[in-house]
Image 1 (tube, rainbow, N blue to C red):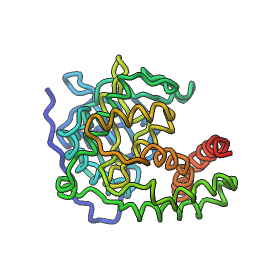
Image 2: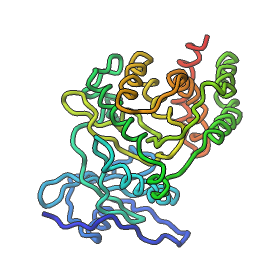
Image 3: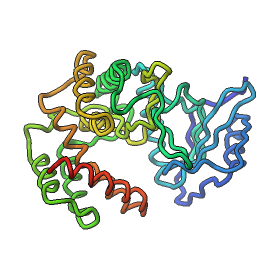
Image 4: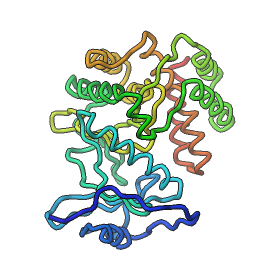
Length: 322
């Protein structure tokens, strides 16, 4: 069995940062940390926005994921993610990545089992795996609700000790309002949708009074499911924080619809999750406002593909707003 180091992080006090830019460079960086890996890849997997990736195996045939941050900002975010992973790993009923190597330039961990609910093929496009987005199974919904309930039950003291970012509700509302203003020219939302966004922002009754630990980016590509369609793992905790408890539900309703959301909230409450009367409505309205946040990120990162994607989403959401 290949020996490996526990999670480690190098000092990045220097302002310079040069990302690793080849398969060989990533594997060599992992080797310096004690991992001897091989791969059939000749080119880096560049599908992710934040990391370059190599899919490799160790001497025992165990598959590994090796990642290199694309930018300095990703290095800083990865430090937070490492703390989040250590916090949630023993507390969730599903698996999360176990970073065996973590330096400024390379992260490596054994690949988790099962498959993402969604994969993207450059030629064939989006493909769903083991989950029907139009009619997710009861097993899938129950497993998702159980994972979210466990996540939101993580106590505040442990979260604070782990140094997890905190995003108060008032700050979230202000950020959303700013994102709407800054992207209005790019998105050109119809008047009915613009009014809907601001009715939601101003409706104190629907907003939560408490904070909870959330994944923050729980789309289908980050959900691992088994052959029975049950959630067994969650990937990519970069956006995790203590904040609005509805965020993960908002992505859920945007993907699976209102009936699935209602079923998930019922299961979530039964599993010990904390709810409030406006949760379902609040999650749906947060999803309706997602294009503003997506467009803001696309503008700041210069990613035209993301802007095009949220424009398409905006059309669908606007049609629902009348």
